Amino acid sequence: MTAMSTNPLADLLRKSPFKPIQEHMRTVFSCTLLLPPLFDALYRVNRDEVNELARQIGKLETEADIIKSSYRLNMPKTLLLPVDRKDLLSLIHEQDSIADGVETISTILTNRDMIVPAGIKGGLDELVEGSMEIVSLARDMIEELDELVHVGFSGREHDKVAAMIDGLRKSEHNIDQILKNVNRSLYTIESALEPVSIIFWYRIIEELGNLSDHSENMADRLLLFLSK
Image (cartoon, rainbow, N blue to C red; front, side, top):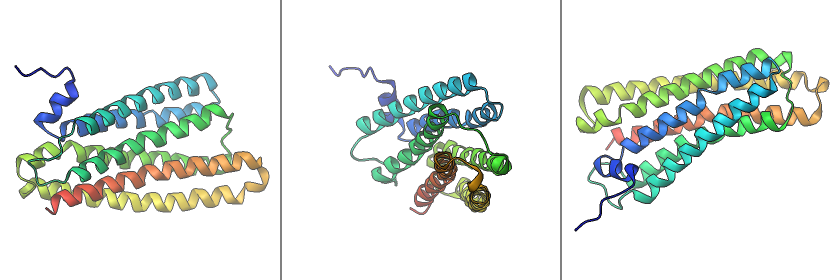
C-alpha cells in the first residue's frame, strides 16, 4: 500500500510543476506590495510602522523560502514537459531573490534611523513605483504558465506571453534610466549627508534596481520555454 503524502506542496507538484511556482510568486508579490507603505512610513518618520511592515515582510519572505525549499526537495528528476528542470529551478530562484531584496531593504530601514534626503525623494518614489510595476508584470507572466502548458506553448497564448515579456523588458529599460537619475541626485548632495548614510542609500537604491533585474531574468526564463 502506497503511503499518502502529507505535504500539500508535493501533491501540487505532482499535478503540475508550475503550480508551486505560481504559489511562490504570489507570496513574493505579497511581500513586494509592502514596499510602498514601508517607504511612506519612512517619509513620515513613523518608526513603529516601519518596524511592523518590516516584520510582515520578513514573515512573507520566510514563507517564500519554505515554498522554494519544498519545491526543490519534491521536484522529480525528470519532467514530462518540454521544459528543463534546471530552468524551473532557476525561475523560482529569481522569484525568491525578489523577496530577499525586499527583506534586505526593510532590514536596513529598521537597523538604522534613515532620514530620506529631500534631493532624492522624487527619484525614490519613481523607483519604488517602477519596481512595483515590473514585479507586477512578472507576476502576471507567471500566472499564464498553466495556460501555456495547456496549449503546448504555442498559439495565441504564446503570442500573449511573448508580448508580456517584451513589455517587461521595456519597463526594465525605464528603470535603468530612473536608477541613473536617482544615483546622480544622491551624488550631487553627498557633501550634505553623513558618510555612512550615503553608503546605505546607495545600497537601498541598488536593491530596488535589483528587483527589476530579477524580473527581467524571469522573463528570459519564460522566453526559453516559449522557444522550445
